[in-house]
Length: 343
Image 1 (cartoon, rainbow, N blue to C red):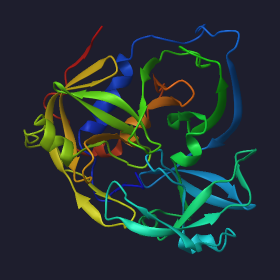
Image 2: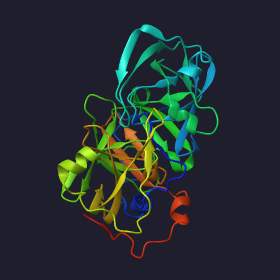
Image 3: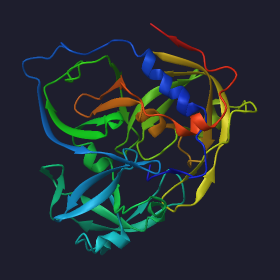
Image 4: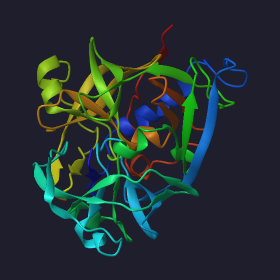
């Protein structure tokens, strides 16, 4: 996604607290002593701190020797620099090299491309990407300077360890590995993934009721939601959320214009080996994509390793999940979601 912001006045739906409960149910499928073959090589290229601001997560990168504050957005297929920041970062948009972007939320728009002479993340110099230069009104909603978006065209070249609960992202080069090879010491589970269409977005299968949906791992959206196209197709999200579930969040795309969602009740939601019951999910117009978007309400409570080298996603519960101020500010529901583990 490029990107989506929860309105400052909105309170994310109950799904935020409910998805956080997944952490307590993850089966112990990995940890210290995970098997690795002799040909398995894991090399950490770089690690960088991740900051939280106004429903987004930010990383700092070097573009042409200048510091750039970028939204970390695994749901965006391209790296984008805001027009206002391009000159300071030494980028010159080529008017003869243009492309059309179709964001998940909002209308399509055209933008130019610019070459980057030098690109660094953390202490490592990485291959320089070809970046999109475009107006990003949505970044005006974020306190402090934001120069653009770090998207999947950069991230999917590597295995990415998203330790958002601990405020850190690491990139690895992995060769000859299979199975549960990652160097984590606590419990985690492994889920296979695929790439969304011809884009560079990692998707896992999530079950809503009796239907399966591709769920994008999307650090660019503050709230997990389901597209209206999928809700219409599956028929599993027809039931409105009951009164007292809280207000439905509004989300904004690159244009900064908020779009309202509707809360729908789903009887069962399964992520990996965990089932939640009676969950309220926001449903939002996201074009024709029949998809779900796993946002920061989930990712800030889980450590996630996206392994492009082995087509797996590893998920671990956060030791100390961050508090949900919105959930604390609203009354507790009379009955919470019922949880169970499946074999």
